[in-house]
Image (cartoon, rainbow, N blue to C red; front, side, top):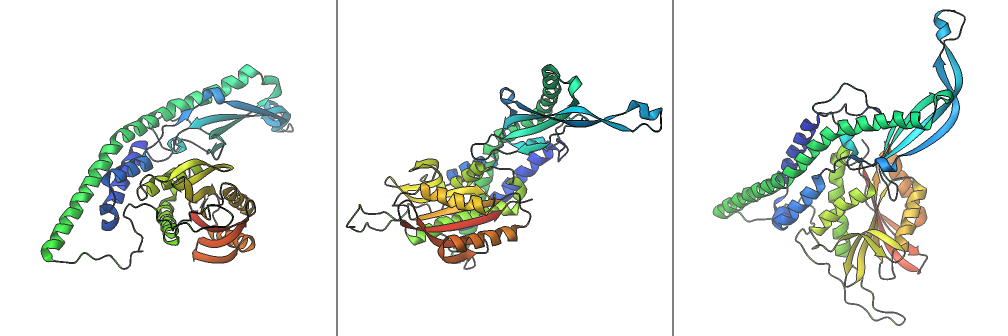
Length: 407
């Protein structure tokens, strides 16, 4: 793919600022009013902040394969029966270049920019323990190959990439510096708009009623409510999240991740951890910083945990879709993090690579009906079912929510 041939970086960041203002201006009255303004500011800053693109040259790795390569036969221009190309012993060299930051900065056109062509074979986003990296490749004759020649050829390409992306990084730094002020100004403006609206309604004596067409999701910050523990003959009392709180958290996740589907290009390049962090930021605006990520739990670290008195009331995992087998493994992984107190869990599945999202939903539906029982669909892309945790024979209530980020 060719880099630096997309939208001008300045225009892209200017458009992002417009989108931020528009999103804040459209925040519903009840949701905005019943949440602290500082929480909104922190949320939008974390959501839109852009990490500059940085290459880790110390981590560059090479791999080499032998194969014949085609080269032009100079005799062809002088002797017609000579073949135009010849096969000669060659090498295919692949260079793996690790990076951190937003890979989308490679797609934007910097200002000023050169007319050089910048090509990479592939951009691999970091997933789980895998490091994000670029794939570059070259072919050369075996007779021309040496360690110095290979390193020189790739180091030139890497240096050119770094120089070109540095201009987009500078735009990102300027954008980040202005972001808190932009968000705060937009939040204050929205607050003033709603204050004037409330004042007008009071003067006209219009009762402030909730919109009945809006889903009845409580937005006011609150603590989770747990039922009183019941005595058990063979073990300690269990704290289980109430159904209404469990459903409320799932609805909040639905609403947040559904916004991802409206502009998938803004999120399709994000990894599981980055998507999880956005969901966490949203949950913490509603549950007073109770939601945590990468929390050690039994046999590993769960992506999302909402604890209560030292016990996880709600745990969830964020996964990129990699097929039915991987989904089964993700559920088993989720169960491995669950103690006997954790009976209500969820799995958030994001589709980035499958253009046929309905076929993906069919695959999940088939797997769910095979894996669990008492299966109910919460919506077109969400399932609720029960399954037994084989590690402790605990009956688990599992919800799977799938969202389409393919673009």
